[in-house]
Structure formats: C-alpha cells, structure tokens
Length: 65
Ligand code: SF4
Ligand code: SF4
Image 1 (cartoon, rainbow, N blue to C red):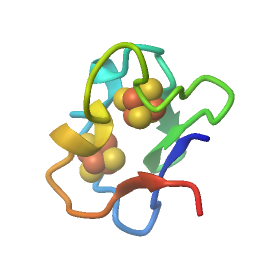
Image 2 (cartoon, protein in one colour; image 1 turned 60 degrees about the vertical axis):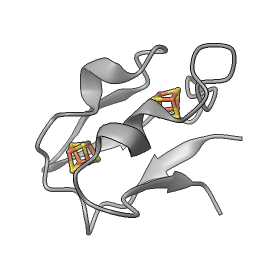
Image 3 (cartoon, rainbow, N blue to C red; image 1 turned 45 degrees about the vertical axis):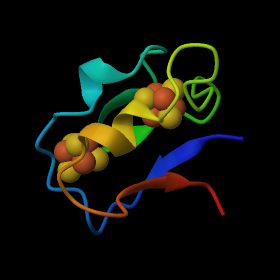
C-alpha cells in the first residue's frame, strides 16, 4: 500500500517533500508526486502519514484507491 498526491489538488507548495521519511516525494512536472515503490505509509516511523499531516490542502495526500 502507498499514498498518492491528487494532482488536480496539489498546489506544489513543497511542504510535504522533506517530511517524508522515505524520500518518496518529488516534483513531477507542475506538481508533486509520490513514488509508490518508496512510500511505506510511514509505517514504523510515524503514527500518521506525514505528507497528509503537513499538506495544507485537504484530501490531497490520500491512499491509492
Ligand atoms: S505516507 Fe509517509 S512514506 Fe508515504 S509518501 Fe507520505 S510521508 Fe512518505
Ligand atoms: S504539501 Fe500538499 S499541496 Fe503542498 S506540494 Fe505536497 S501535496 Fe502538494
């Protein structure tokens, strides 16, 4: 399982990029994106997903459906 960033909602503020313990977040064109192969949902690191926690836009960092 991994999280994703909804591209249509991301404002490319960059707040999430360096909060990810697995360096899974990077710029992808005009927005940011999560590498699903690197995202571990913060398991073993934090109780909550850091990208979702710091993102100022609700429901932008979400589990891949
Ligand atoms: S859920 Fe955690 S590991 Fe996955 S992208 Fe967000 S901050 Fe990184
Ligand atoms: S914190 Fe949210 S709005 Fe900002 S770059 Fe990350 S996903 Fe996009």
